[in-house]
Image (cartoon, rainbow, N blue to C red; front, side):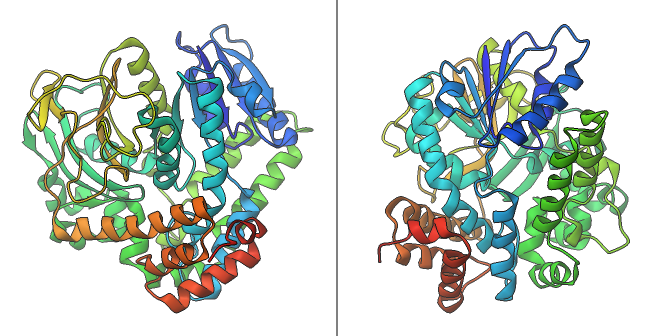
Length: 487
């Protein structure tokens, strides 16, 4: 089968290639990127990593999108429209107004979405044209709103993956002595949210919720990065473990102050780091060793503003993610039919016949009047949503939610969750309203909808600041200025 990695000159592409090595599933990997120089550097890393192995898929690189996608069975989308230089502008415009300057959270994430939505819509149309049967796995940030955009073209054959909820559940599972992959029939969990705004509300082993045990123990919470970032007392009080990105919502002033006190923003750090890597990869003795060193530094400094100046990120936290492994499990389940369970970004009304995002092929299912249907075996055998039911009642069908899913030969099936309290539902609804306004602006060119989107965001909450953000981003990013030409 053919796997295409869009954004194949990006820093994580070698991780994906390494994950598929040794698998009988993928026989050809195509790296696509708009930059020949970046493609060449990553090609060198991948070829050195695969040297001497006989189980590696054939590798091709190209800058031609249609050529790359034609006949693809799977597409991994990991683009950064505007590059790391664009990320710097996303951060600086917000920080200069006293707001959070971050890649995906807050106004920076909305600006990133404005630039990215038109590009990803065209990518989705190209996939539909030259690889209509392909499954697309989206890593492009902001993952929720971008996955929603692609679903408008590709329907249920596109899902999003983020490694933060995966890392959270793995950390808790390790504390409880079980493995998400090896103990599938014993472990169950309730995770729900939007991308970068979610909560782990239960972790059951053999039918018993063990999350309260973890929350009650300071010693165990010390091994959960999210609890250390946000506060052990807070997670105990709320009875759940939030996604690490909730740090920016719950400790906004602290995050802004620490970012401003740093010598450079995260975007500036990564921009310089990546420039050095791509400049030296051509002439160095081992591009693979250079890439590994830079990757380790990148992971170790992730969310540095959430830690004390002299506090280093722990190795157990760095090792918590692994979205490339989850993506491989998704592919294996879809092809072989062997069920897997994992957290994915999917439509709230996945499989509903009248959903706006149902233009693509529908997931197969058995009609039922019941809201859920039991799948799997053993104590952790789960129920999954019957066709026509929403994951979160009260949110629109087309909103992309981050939730545990069963994946098998018939598709991706969201699992039901416990009812949401008003606090969680309200946070999700408000963020969704902001992102939907931005998506509408990207589709129509409406400056008013963009203004509304910036103003409604929970970390802005001001028409005055929303207008200032709109003007600032239009000036900093010519593509946004060109896009938003209508009232």
